[in-house]
Each structure stands twice: as C-alpha cells, then as structure tokens.
Image (tube, rainbow, N blue to C red; front, side, top):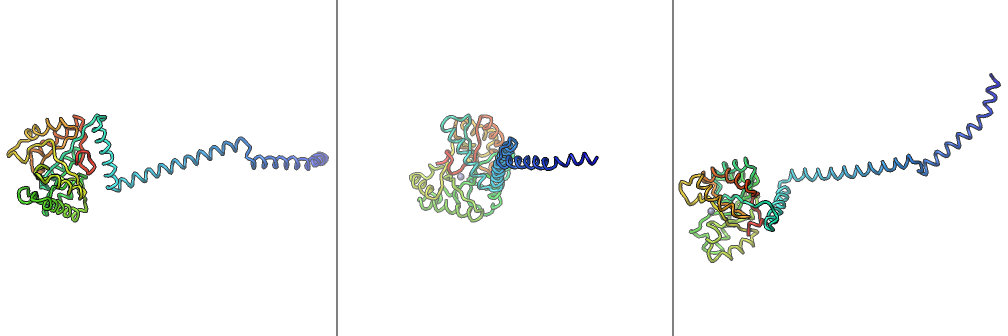
Length: 293
Ligand SMILES: [Zn+2]
C-alpha cells in the first residue's frame, strides 16, 4: 500500500505543473477574449444594451403621451394640426372627406346646455359665437370645458345702434368682448363673426377686416343656415330642410344656427348624422382654418 502511495507521489509535481499550465492558458484565452463563448457574450451584451435604448425611447414616448394628455393646450395644438392636414387635403382634392363647421350665434342662452349635451352625445366639436352676457358666466365656462371654440360676435350685437357707425366703434365692441372673455375665463378668442354677416359692415368692411387681423382675429361668414332667427314657429323638419341641401353641396360647409332655438336643437342630431354619412368631418373653427379669412 505504501509502495503505491510512493509511486503516486512521484507524479504530484508533474500534475501541479500541468494544472498550472492549463490555468495559465485558460486565463490567457479569457483575457484576450478569443473564446467563441466570449464572442456570444459580447453580442448578447450589445443586444441587451440595444434593448435598453429601445426601452428608454418607448418610455420617453409614453412620457410625452402622458404630458399631452395632462396638457389640454398641447392636446389642442395637436388636434388643430391634424385638422389643418385634413383641410389642406380637401382643398387639394386628394381627400375622400369634406369639412363641416357647426356654428351657433348670439349666445350663451339657457338652451345652450342642451346643445352641449347633443354635441357630446355625438362626440362632435362646434363653434359658439358669443356676445357679452354677465348673467351667463357658467354657460361660457361649460362651452370652453367641453372643448368647443368660443368665437367673438361682438359684445353688444347692436347692428343698427352704433356697432357699424365707424371702424373705431366696431373694433371697440369686438375688443370689449375680447377683454370680458380673457378676464373671466383666461381664454383667447381668435375667430370672429360679424353680427348680420360681413356684408352688414357695408363700405367699412375692408377697414373692419384689417382691424380684426391687426388684433389677431380671422373672420368667417356662413354658407348654409336653418333660418332659425328669421322664421317664427320654425319646425325641426323645416330647419333641417333649409340647411341640409345647401350644406351638402360645399367642400367647406359652414352651418349657421342659433342656440336659443329649439327647432335647430331638434334637427341637430340628424344634421350631424347626415353630414357624417356624407363623408363630412365636423370640425370646430380655429384661426388657421381654411374656412376662416
Ligand atoms: Zn348674430
């Protein structure tokens, strides 16, 4: 037995040398990075860092999306950018769609809330050309809160009692409403509608338009109407039949209604549905819209 041990112990130095050489080479190979395994590890590390970059980009996108969702101003800017693209394509004749703008004048009224309800039910945004009415502050607020455009229709609407007396009297009335809305709601209006339409300003029209532009406003008239301010006892069928045939002939259809009128209110759901069935995209007005001047 001890003979065996003696013989084996002769090999111990040799074993140590072989072991040392093996360890030395393994260390060398690993240090130089020439093993096929380390190549794979290198690729894997690259892939992982690539994934990390992608993950970071995704997280940034998500942050941006979240900031848009929590920033109504940004959300609105993006909305109007898209609206502008749709309008340009319609104008160039390369869109399957047309554009329609629902506009409601002379408010706010108590019935405005009902209009807001119908618009919400149809997921539709519109434009309310309002006057100065200190008793209706919550209604202005409801219009703004629902995301509709608040348009300037002068403070007084006194067509025959001084509004169009001179360009100065005109712009004074426009800016009075501008200040009233800014002070109460911190809202900046940029679209305007002349009481009675732009032709009511007569020979002053060009001067009035220049004054509007100088004060950061564009204006819009209309090309179809329910005649709800002209005809007493108008039925909702009549309102629909007045506005619709003409509205459907236009690529940019601007519909005029008044939100005190129950016939226009009754016709509104069918008006919206018919426009949509005829490939109209219903948009609120904004300063850069191709429908305003
Ligand atoms: Zn009016």
